[in-house]
Image (cartoon, rainbow, N blue to C red; front, side, top):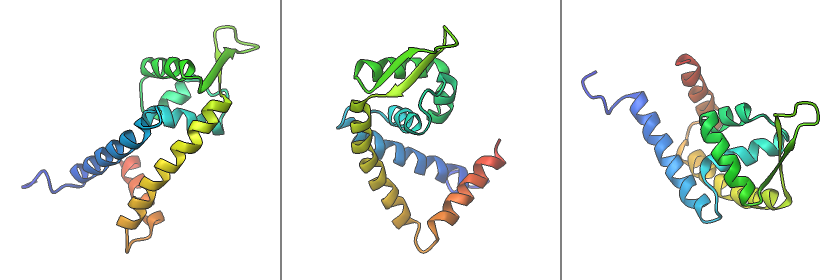
Length: 140
């Protein structure tokens, strides 16, 4: 590798960092972080998801997920109740306030996605996403 900055890996990291910066900036205005948005989005699809599943979806450790859930609960975006069958397990669900902030956040994320789709031209955005998924799979 004669130029380590002209690699697929560097370009991926550069794109990931730019996306994270854009999302963090927009989401901060409505009181969220990017990992918090990921948690709210997943809870919309999988109410009651485990902390481990939420951590995987948000790309954080289980310990970090616990701190994220505490912050979301304090903000009133989620509620956590004991699981009816497993006393130590907490069921985590969106509140009405959480659904409302998620709706606002989704617009911010959609705007970033639209910029990515436009930048992928003339390639098909689905093809670009498929190639990126293949990269991820190749590195697992």
